[in-house]
Length: 191
Image (tube, rainbow, N blue to C red; front, top):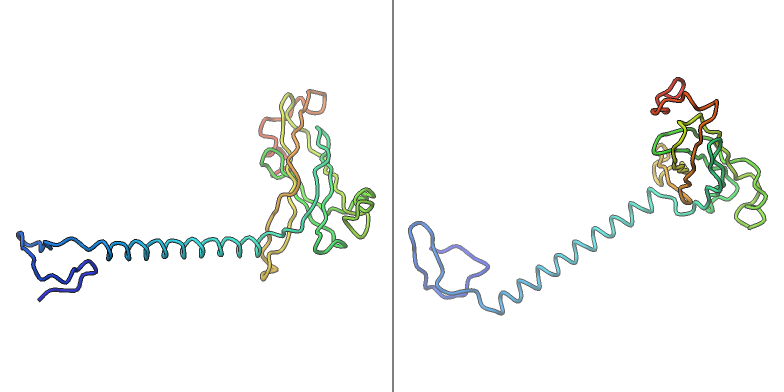
C-alpha cells in the first residue's frame, strides 16, 4: 500500500531500488506551477507579517513626535533644544553621551525663545545645556543627545530616542584637562 505524496502523479508505476521507493514519473508541470505559486504566496504573507510587526514595534516603542537639535558642542558644553510635539507643554528628559559613554541627564527646561517664536512649543523653556567634565586633550569627540520617554502601553518601560544630528568637537590641551586619563568615563565620580 502506498502513502500519499504531494508529488504523486496518479500513475501506479514505480520501481524499488533497495529500501528506497522511486517514482518513474516526474511531477507534472501544472502541479509544480501550483506549488511554486503557493510558495510565493506564503513568502509574501510572511513578509507582510514581519513588516506589520516592525511597524507595530516602532510605533509602540519610539515616539515619532520628538523634534529638536544639538546646536552647539565644544570642550566645555553641549547645548540644544527638544520638544515633544504630541505634548508641547511638557518638559523632556534628555541624556548626553560623548563617544558612546553616558555623561549626564537633565530636563530640557532652559529658556529658548527661538523655539517659541518658531511655533514649536507653547512656551520658551525647552532648551538644554550640559556642562562637560574635563576630557582628554588633542582628540575629536562626538556628542549625542537622546530623549527619554515611556513606551506606549507600559509606563514603567523607558526608551531613549536620538533626535537631531550628532555634533563633533575637538578638545585642545589646557591646565584643566592635561592630566585627564584616556578612560575619562571611569575617573573618580564618573562611575
